Length: 318
Image 1 (tube, rainbow, N blue to C red):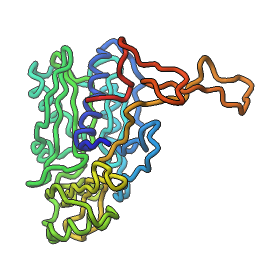
Image 2: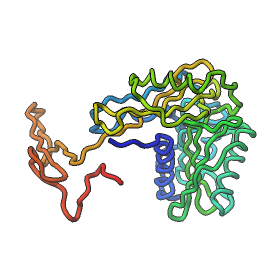
Image 3: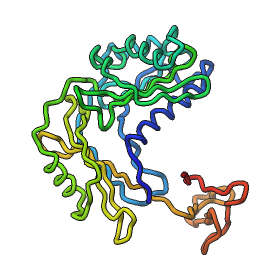
Image 4: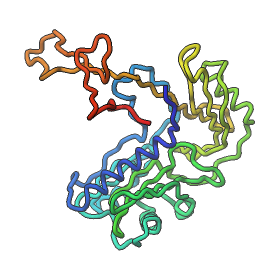
């Protein structure tokens, strides 16, 4: 069993796109400029993970990007994908930078880019000014600058992220889960204690222990909501049953669950794969000719693929 913060996971996902963009450079044409709609939601699950996906996002609705945003994306020759908040899920250069003539310093370059492209990003002047630096990650000759939105005094607890990939005074990649409105959410009227009870009840585990309570903002299509981020867990080491760990966002005014993120990932100490030894049958036979490969020797393994030269399985990390 593994647990990890989904805030970190989302940040890594945004930064990973920047890595690919900066590696591609200016000479790589990735797609014809255009605009496509895509939700900002996570993939349904991890390939090979047979555990039930317990992530639930109860936020509803979708905002389309404005005609001006689409025009601006076309003007800079960007491949554009849009999230449910009507802001860019991705802007990818397709042969030339998204912007040039920026400062050499990555943070300064990213801030200048944001200020000059608020209409494309769907940000107001105050919303752009409220972005805070979350991380700066050098990548080869470039860097990824990661921002997080603030809504009044509250940081975004989920979504509200913006990553800008810059190199040599030019911007090549943008990805975000920005909320369009940066207005301060209405004050909390629910107590933290009441929110914790709601989160425990929602987990279905009366023995759950609350590990952290934090008041944050959660972007929605109708504006940010103040919410309690309740991090809780039960039987984390599997001594009695199935481990449970959630990050649950409880609306701080009406007590509804806005979002529940499952913090438990499952892995195996000795991963195994069912694989075709050469190619699958071409006659559409129903006979399964796959064999079992394992990282290390175990009962039922047809072939052990781990070796001193390659001792780790594909999904192992420390």
